[in-house]
Image (cartoon, rainbow, N blue to C red; front, side, top):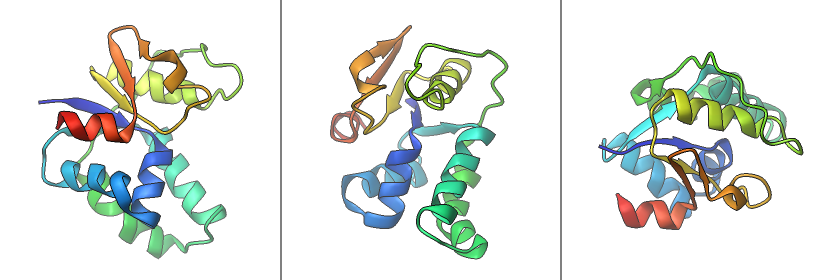
Length: 133
């Protein structure tokens, strides 16, 4: 089974706006792939939902609860310092490496997608990912 880190931008887009990112969430909930995340990525998702979109703690829990309950939660030890412009994106790489993932799913064209690959991990768009699962 595919093990993938779904970047927070995809998660938030799917939860709030639907479309293809929502299909990624649905595929995870039906166990078509293993969603791998970390406490830092989970917290980033919650923080953005609360601060940027002004959702309550209860609303955030309703939106994220099912995903995070089914996710394989990794606690990365290794620190990666590859991406300088947006250091938070390094947390995605750390999670993928230590979570033995083959894929990172993201919409981040500036920092992650331009890498194309990190070690043996492919970095791909939502559409490309959905063609695989």
